Length: 251
Image 1 (cartoon, rainbow, N blue to C red):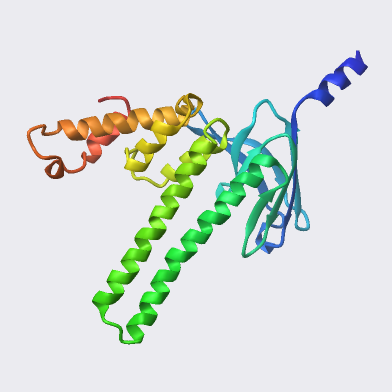
Image 2: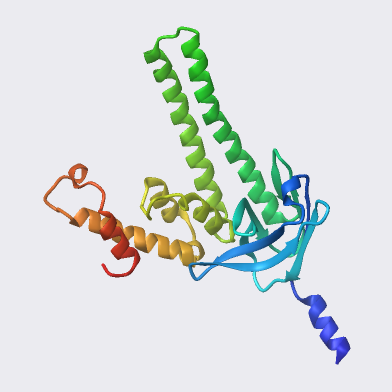
C-alpha cells in the first residue's frame, strides 16, 4: 500500500520554485502566490524570505497563472505555475522568472514590452532636450507624435500576436487580463475586437475573457442605445450608474 501511494505521489505533476532576492526589504517577509478564482484573489501557496532566498513547492492540478505578493502588496510579477524547476530572481533593477517553457516565453514577451515602454519614456526626455536646443515646438510635436504613434502600433502588434499565438495555453488569457486590468471599465477596443476574431475557442471560453467580453458588449450596447437617433460621436460614454448596474447584473 505504501509503495502504491508513493508511486502515485511521485507521478503527480508538481511545481518547484527557487527564489533569490537582493532587495533587503523583502528579507523576513512573507510571500504569497495568488490567483484569480471566481472573481476573487485566492492564495495558492506561501513562504518566508530567509537570508535572500525563498522556496515554493506543491502539487499541481492544472497549469495556471499566478502573481507574487508580499503580504497584500503585489510585486507585479506574473508567474506560470507549471511542472518543473522555476527560478525567480529579484533585485532593485530587474525581476525575472525562468526555468520552464511558459515562463521563458512570458518573460521574453515582458522584456520586449518593457523595451517599447522605455522608448516611449525616452520621447519625453528628448522633448525636453529639443526645447532646450531651441527647436520649434511645432516641429517637435510633429516628429515625436509620429514616433509615439509608431511605438504604439508596435506595442499593439506585440501584444495581439502574443495573445493569439498563446490562446490555447494560460499565457493568452493571462496577458489579456494584464492588458485590460487597468481599464476603468470593460470596453471593446479595436485591438480587443481584432484579438477575438483571431483567437481560439479555448481562449474565448476562458472564464475571465468570456465575462470581460460579455460585460464590455453589454456596456457598448447600452451606450449605443442611450440615444439611437444621435450620432455615435454625440452619444458619449455611459454614466457610472449604468456601468455599475451592468457589472452588478441589474441592466
